[in-house]
Amino acid sequence: MRVVVRAFARLREEIGKDRLILELPDEATLEELLTRVLGKPHGGHVMVAVNNRLLPSEGLARVRLRDGDVVDFMPPASGG
Amino acid sequence: MRAELKPKLSPMSAVVEELRASSEEVGAILIFLGVVRGVSRGRKVLRLEYEAHPELAPEVLTRLVREARERHGVLDAVIEHKVGTADVGEPVMCIAVASRHRREGFSALRELVERVKHEAPIWKKEVTEEGAYWVEERGGGKPFIELVSPVEVVVNEEMNAQELIVRLGLRAEGARIVRGGHEVELKALLRRGDRVKIIPARARPSSASSQRGK
Image 1 (cartoon, each protein chain N blue to C red):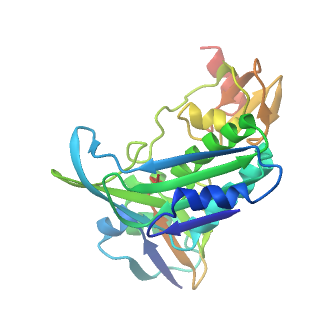
Image 2: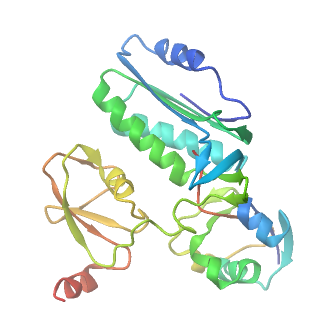
């Protein structure tokens, strides 16, 4: 399946692109995607949205992705 | 009710007028205006660059305003947050609340300021004389303090459970608040004198009791 990853702020700079299109095995989880794109150390400190819906930080690893999903990786909020 | 990302914030007089006219019941208007500090951690700041998730940031800001109205009973609220490049001294975040009385207005305003800073997908990069850095106030995403076992605190001022967690610098996700042996929701109002236990996400009841015994 194919998913689109969008990265914001610091993560965009670390990845070097604001958008990636990735082929993943069917039934791939968010954790697998996080590891592939960001590497393990980043996993706990990323806000994630799938199809413009923010996900709670707990249980991210178990979320299964679907073909066509748009996944946003965002650093912790630092506005204000 | 309005929550927006803007390249330049509205004049304060316009925001005040908007809130003043929102209801005949308005008795107080409280404003928090964040401006760009010229010095940060000893470095001279040249400018800030704000980035926001274009769809999710306005959505989160709108939800925060709605929740503040529901929780605190304020009449109306406005959030404007800057996006793009901001010069030193420039206003970058305006949070304004209209309420019947000062008490609920202060509570709503304080909570909104903390929640916008910690929950809205908005980021800032500090450009200083020594280089440019993405600001992450929680030290790379970690909370200021991490609870490893339950703690008991006494509340000295009315606030809701979520605000208690934020004011202690803790992470709200997964934490449980227990008052009088019963878990309360994050939006539950805590009163002066309430004794509450905060149980972190990793200390579930079975481990909590064993940790207390250590």
